[in-house]
Length: 66
Image 1 (cartoon, rainbow, N blue to C red):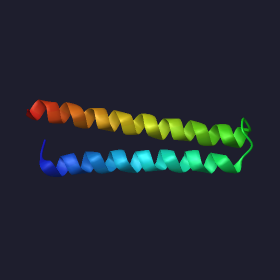
Image 2 (cartoon, helix red, strand yellow; image 1 turned 180 degrees about the vertical axis):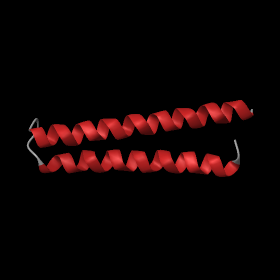
Image 3 (cartoon, one colour; image 1 turned 45 degrees about the horizontal axis):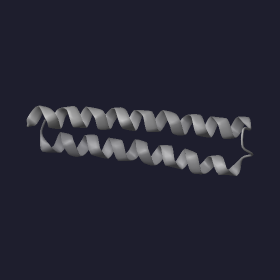
């Protein structure tokens, strides 16, 4: 993997992670366990899961270079 691709993967991870955190924070506007709260928390989980997948891909690429 080239250095620029590494930066792209890390940027993608950071963006997905930030989006997950944003949805988590948005959930505080709603009553716990309300449908809106559940949607926010679900979106947070989805973005965090995708962020972790991106990070795992990055780690595999780095390990392949060593």
